[in-house]
Length: 414
Image (tube, rainbow, N blue to C red):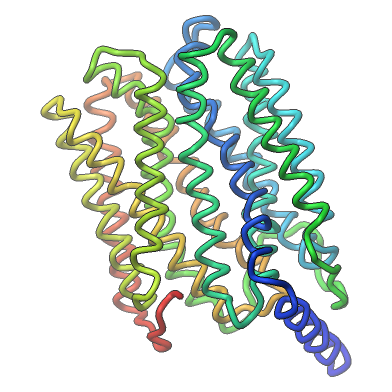
């Protein structure tokens, strides 16, 4: 309807004026809730060896616990993107942070697999909210003139938090008493500071009229489908690679190094996501097509290194695989977010971010679980080799999608 289109254009223009008026320094505190929630997303990684010892469960069960995080995240993405675009970022972010705090309490007192599943489920819901509403809030505050900077900082906030979580958990759990309690008490303090940041964010509620169902598969506006497909084609294999390292990396380290050090497991995850953060700043002036192709290449090489690591019992090859996997996720994520920021209006940006992450996490939630149960059946070496070969092929396909689609805009990501 003409009246609806006029109202939407007016709402978008109003949001752009608000974004332009916000000082640039506000982008950094706006990104902090994303970082804080992603610290929680992977803080449990080095602690699973403790829970496995105390509770007793297999590698397959471990990947199921991880998968419930994906279930919560995907369910959240079906709702949070649309709700955020209609009601605003804060009404989504504040309940998400409350759930994240509840997850900290459950993790700190967990004595069963069921408790771990609930905590991971709550964590996934919170993460789904921040990758849609939180990352959109960063872009809103950055404004249209700094949209590529907003995409870069939102993406880096996500991967930096994802890497900081396991490192922080590993160090705290090895050096302080009551490791699971201490880790999540510190994380709860970080989340409380994120609540304060959200409360102070200079964001107004959108004024565009609501259309369509509130719960639906996230989508992008007409004309942005090709950009979404290219982003998913590279981002999905990349985040699946890092998900595998997070879920079964400690088990691989135990087999290769004969160690259960939580600091080592946390450090492996940290360097993986540190690579994901650093590479995004390094390529911020490259064309989007080049960034995406580099991401597909990095993921394929990561899987080749992973196969080599388990075949030769090489720790250095495993570290190289983690670094390349981190680079693959970071590049795919940055390229996908940048494509969406360049074509999707602010009134649909949270839903578009949700669509990108649904495409990525569907694969990330499925393949590592299958690899975990396959490893229980045929051994960790064979299971990892099969997983690596499948994901290598998917990364190559993703690169092919980018090559075939091209990039008519041929613009840098920042």
